[in-house]
Amino acid sequence: MSKSLPKRSEDYSLWYNELVKRAGLAENSAVRGCMVIKPYGYAIWEKMQRQLDDMFKRTGHQNAYFPLFVPKSLFEAEEKNAEGFAKECAVVTHYRLQTDPDNPGKLRVDPNAKLEEELIVRPTSEAIIWSTYKNWIQSYRDLPLLINQWANVVRWEMRTRLFLRTAEFLWQEGHTAHATAEEALAETRQMLDVYAEFAEEHLALPVVKGVKTENERFAGALETYCIEGMMQDGKALQAGTSHFLGQNFAKAFDVQFQTKEGQLEHVWGTSWGVSTRLMGALIMSHSDDEGLVLPPKLAPIQVVIVPIYKTGQLEELLERIRPIQMGLIARGISVKVDDRDTERPGYKFAEWEMKGVPVRLAVGARDLDNGTVEVARRDTKEKMNLPLADIVNSVDQLLTEIQANIYRKALAYREEHTTRVDTYDEFKQVLDSKGGFVVAHWDGTSETEERIKEETKATIRCIALNEPDEDGTCIVTGKPSSRRVYFARAY
Image (cartoon, rainbow, N blue to C red; front, side, top):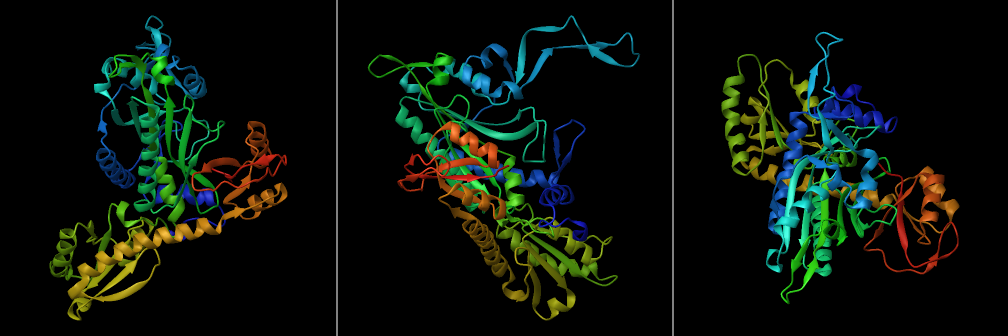
């Protein structure tokens, strides 16, 4: 299976697209720009969803669900938000089809079924949610309101790529309301920390936490916080965002509350989200020329057991394997015994390697007689013979080591591809020859930011929270700068 997978070094984009398909994660659908997420890919997304959902609930959030359709009048109530998404919106104008009298067997839009008001297919849900919050919030006793929803959204994309950019995608979006700006800002930063913790501890992806520039800020927000990851081709990927909305949406939808002192004030809002783009981050940050490399915490199958047998031996061998299987399951480890008699072991090895299963056990009767098990780890491709008597403990410890090693490798790559520069020539040279994050001084103006983007295709990924203040001069204009920012070419 892996022989025909393109090499990352030769065509990274083709490697990515082929890997997504051959590992059984997703495929293009009959709807242009949309994807079908296949069972194995959806199983990974479910593990992401389950973990994130637990983290949200531990921080006091509840799940709800809001309509897919947003009346145009509600959508345009917050002008910056409406303007920011206007070019990406899908719009419903009619509510019925009819038989086409000029084309037997075909349908057409019923011209008499035009909606009184167009409906926007949600590109994001601030409008519909804040119009609802107006009915939910009257008093300080109703605050904070901490709501999340798991949903799909539509943003009409012309150039699409599976998981990274599709017209429809899955995500979660949190929307919260608070009595003070300080509380809302604390919420915004808390959820950024939740995303960073998930990315690093589960996705095994080191991220830079920071604030977006005004040019890159979410439409309708006062501040946008983000986490940025580095992919193996030296491009950055925005893996999550958390927005401080101020009172923009509260004022647009007149969401007010009575304070303890009896005054009426507008609430302060946040919104935050991650999407199936995390699947793209998972693939591009860890995988190799043989297929997926999955962190054990997100692998649908953490251990695959491949029986090695001769004709007529399978049933007896499976009985001897069963205690290993059940011991691993009792430890909370997901196990697959590949007992197919239609494929040879070599084919199975290649298939599970392509799918990124962290640990493979090859078990034959002779191995069991000798009290050993052949163990292969996906991240390093190392093989070892381990004692059968302690195999459950050994595999459990190995999964922990694999999770840590995948993170260490990604962190080493990011550190190697983070370069501090002081001149524009050096900036362009690093982008073209090495890629990665380029940390440089910027004068803080949108004009300079746009010039750099136009001339180099690099954008300011964030103003990193951990970057210290440092007096310097902008690499382009020579004007004063108080700190460096992170640039990169990005997805």
